Length: 263
Ligand SMILES: [Zn+2]
Ligand SMILES: [Zn+2]
Image (cartoon, rainbow, N blue to C red):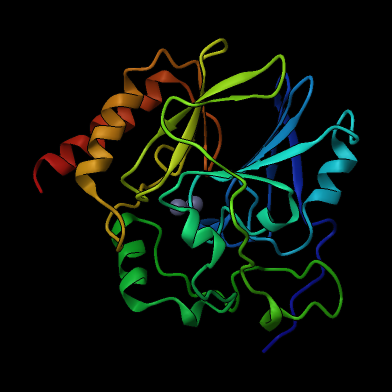
């Protein structure tokens, strides 16, 4: 198998809103390349999701935070492989109780697409992503000699469990936890009402939604979308893809609600 090139820096970072920086992993396969959002509060910072954990995330964040001496919390939206890879690096770990067991003891996962169950490949094709047929889940290694076969998902227990309606307060910036099941049974997002910012997790992002795999529920997903599309949203920061506004949110929700109405 041909050797992968070495990436120039693993993470991408883009300041998108006051206090909020979007972190990406451009060398991860597009289907598994999730967004992370660094939110800088007055007293505490927070990373919303933590990617694949290919290389340490916290040192990278400390290099871009305004004040790296501040505590930093890790908020995990849901227990899918592309959203909690670096969670174990953080002392404060926040998630919903339903996903806590999976986050503590993750199921086995590899960077070899041949290990993806055929049933999930079929779902990806059906959704519009197409089959994942690249040699690896990443198209570059973070450094020479990186052992692709040694990568594994590391679990950790949550230090704070949150439910719908709980407030995550960073000092000067506080958001409400939204329980948004459907794509995952224990998925949570965040709603920052003051700025109309919705952290949509994998409930809403600007790409094909996935609702057919085990542990997912179209009925729950429909209720989630009805709730989210009614919010006075200015911007949606999804678990994948670029930010978008209210018009696109409503269009997307109506599209999927129509599909699910026929199920
Ligand atoms: Zn995802
Ligand atoms: Zn997901």
